Image (cartoon, rainbow, N blue to C red; front, top):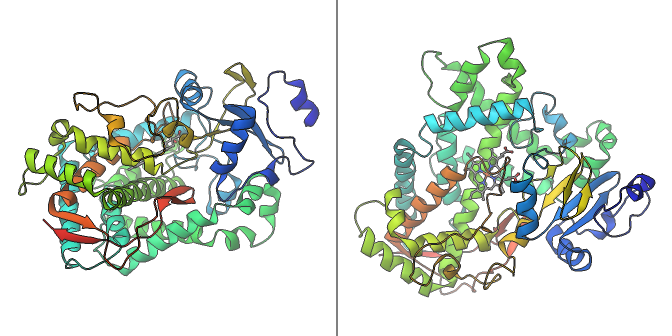
Length: 474
Ligand code: HEM
């Protein structure tokens, strides 16, 4: 292998590979971004690593990531195969969307998902109404805390998950529901199961996964999470009437009923479970973690909070609920939400990509089948683009006239063919949930609590450390 790598002229530089383990011992898998920063300083914006036998190239900075994901979109559109999910049923024609290999099945499923979500109102009014209604429930739940200190983690999560759960399974969970609490814990634990050296090692030496019972033991929560979504699908099937399409699961079942051709396009029972659990996983924690960052920044920067309050009072007032149409008239609030996404930087390493063919990037040769990590932190905090990369500074998104501007390096949803499929829905949720809560409350740090930490906790998603707040009615 080493010979092969040496033969490729212009392969990106990187730390010296050790026998068998490659460069794995040099990387802190509990927070790889820290290691990447060190390598970047030494080797530049495109550097290589080697996870045992797997070639990995890490892309850093806006120009590099843009060249790969936008200018050479198809070359970088594949995903590495993920043997660690095989024990769940992941495999040929049942890879869901998020981790599906680039090709016909992924294309069909992505197209189907986008169209179906759009038909259920994604980007349209009916979905906006649903989000608005859920934001109203969230406000009532926060009001019932009576201004006492509390952690809004669970409530916000519940509200955001309800939106995607309704679209996907036609189900919503009452706040405080025990089943929902279990689902949330399972999901968070399953993310924790996937970080660290051991999962990384199992990914590159999949033969270890054949040890009887090992995957079930290490990825216990992942399995329980999938079983939970299975239960929602089964419950749902009991009431299925092909004449009506109530939600995404119904639409998928209808597609499956078309028979062989549909099967070839990935519409099978196992994939129904993967696709829907992908939507739930991709569409709940991401948005709710971003909202938790938003309220944390409001606590830490009361002067910014008060400017948002003023803009809400001026444009919407205190009574009617915010609508997406208000966004165009609220440059400051819009800038704050974008800055929350930039600073919160919730998916620091993006999702892994893989080269679909031999390609060149910034003068380097990258062979087909190389795992690609897009260091999104290095884009969202690129010091050549952002004036104050490591500070919360909404002015990054405002011009000298106070109008909203969006620098191209704002890529929290990534870019290119594999860019986030739920970007429109996520943006709607962030705006409606944030402005609805800010319209009704002032958020303050409880007197007996320390100033919350501004750094994050990494478990694939970068989330705020737990914090308490008081929601004082306005
Ligand atoms: C993929 C970010 C919300 C569904 C992604 C990726 C990122 C991302 C960085 C990886 C793109 C890549 O591979 O280059 C976010 C953020 C969100 C959010 C920051 C919220 C603030 C959502 C929502 C949905 C969703 C609400 C549900 C509809 C997906 C799916 C993919 C994806 C299905 C995989 C796309 C593919 O591989 O073709 N997202 N996302 N996301 N996201 Fe989101």
